[in-house]
Amino acid sequence: MKIVTQVKLMPDAAQASALERTLGTVNDAANWVSEVAFEHGVPREYELRNHTYAELKARGLGAQAAQHVIKKVRDSYTTLKANIRAGNLGKDGSRRRRRAESKPVTFRPEAAQPYDDRCLSWQYDQRTVSIWTVDGRVKNIRFVCSADALTMLQAHRQGESDLIERDGVFYLVATCDVPEAEQYEPDGFIGVDLGIENIATASTGYLAAGRGLNRYRKRQLALRAKLQKKRTNSAERRLKARARKEARHVANQNHIISKTIVTEAERTGRGLSLEELKGIRNRVRLRKPQRVALHSWAFAQLGDFIVYKAKRAGVPLVFVDPAYTSQTCAECGHVDKRNRVDQGLFICRGCGVVAHADRNASRNIATRGGSVWNAGRESRVPTTSSSISFMCSNICGRPPTTSTPPSPPAPPSSSKPPATCSKATPPA
Image (tube, rainbow, N blue to C red):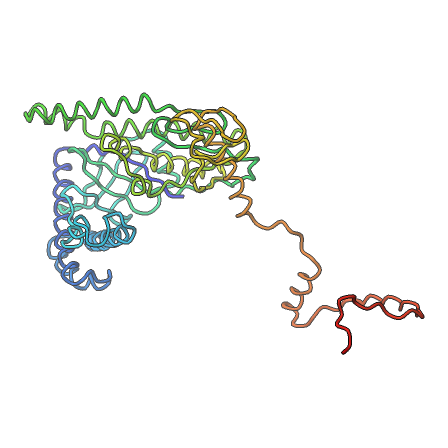
């Protein structure tokens, strides 16, 4: 399982200047490579290398840096093509899709640049890195991170690391290959219903209310609108200082919720059952005031956090179809749209049970999770004699020798004529 670990670089003035010029140079070169790729119909990486490698070397890029720039551009077009195929940029002929297909992919001056072990080396004891720049190799750049992050880097760092600049601060995002824990056989499943009013509701009774987070979002939205309306230098400074503050707060809440759910499943020896909500923003139609809440709903991030934490803990996890889980009674199985009286109340029209709507849905998700797990598990049917004979014939090339059981004795003869079928056709 691959996860990323971020460390903050603490360069001095000269080192920071070299890093800034390096990112500007490689991303400017990436824009030129992107134009070449667009002109030639986005060729394969090998062909694109033949068109651009010599020019990149002439621009002062090292061999590995040039290779990474070419690969970064080719990967960006692969991602663009995948988004178009998935419909993420609209239907064929839409304005957004035409705009994406009609021009080359562009890179910001501070966009991430990948580094491998030939361009970047880590000194964990000194907490420094040595990195390639356009000014040559820059050594002894200090970095800071938490103790857990340092342990993760020392034990599991593998592959490339990305150098990024964010608000004048440089970071290295390293890839760590963490082994997954051995998965146990679950004793039942915990269903998790995701929502906006209630961020996550588990079938065990755990409920992460979204009231505080929704109020925080509204307050941040109003504050951003107020600052943007002023259009002063101080307002722009405040907007820049508050950038990504809401995203960090939401990510922290999702980490807390996902850890609580996975820890409960691990403690009780059960698995987790989640809803497959991919594409929900394209399927539902809402009024304009509700669209902000829907499109700021970070259900995918919460799902990703639960998935990777479950893999690290060895907790079995399945995804189920969420259709009609909010309209189905978890007690009797009766399905009716009128069962969901309002956002939080569920009253079954069949058996009359009254329950919390999200808890009822989470119980249905747990039931479906058990069905999906049982349908996808390996067969536990014991091997039969016919299977042994088939395997022996495949291995030895001849059927196995088995003793033929004695034939049963013939029945005693009877003077009575044999019985005929009453529906037999009489002779003409």
